[in-house]
Length: 123
Image (cartoon, rainbow, N blue to C red):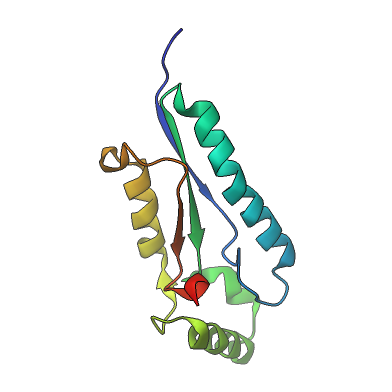
């Protein structure tokens, strides 16, 4: 049988596992992806494929650009007040974790879940 190699990083909804308003469906999908990672990692391991999950927290993107400045500032202040590191993360910080998981440095990492959320889900 041919041996394939590969790496997969599943990126869940940014509010998976936390209680922000309007995030219920995203949390369910994120939790499902998190739970599925173990099954997928087991099923694909004999093919040399690693499966890991990245769970971003509040990341600074243009996603909230539809909000008025006041609403966005209130939302971000509320989120930051819950984050132990006291700030919103950057896309580069989340990408760095994904790049690590896709790199050869993570060749023995599979079925893992990594929160890039400034400690929000650990509260």
